[in-house]
Amino acid sequence: MTILVLAVLLVGSASWIGYVFYKTKQNDFAFQNQQLGRLVEQRNILNSVQATGFYSLTVVDPENNQRTLLLAPVTPQQQAQQGSQ
Image (cartoon, rainbow, N blue to C red):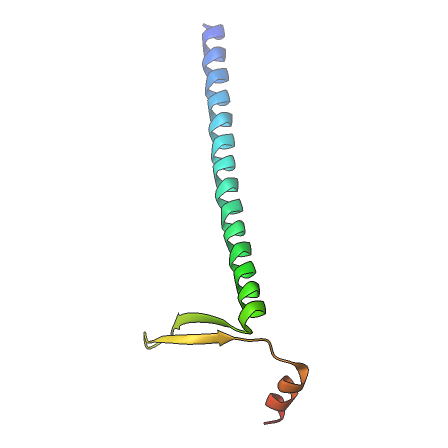
């Protein structure tokens, strides 16, 4: 009887460890894909800015209207001019 109980506990704990390991690997894979997606988007933004001088992004304002946001590099002189206005 003792051997049977120990065998059930061993199988149960091994199954639990396997399940936790599987879920951890699954979450790590999803996290890696999410990070990769962010890096690809950042690369696309930088490539667009290098090729065209700006990056266009469609956003929604608080009133639920679509707006186009342009991202462009700013030189230190332009930034100083904007700060003095």
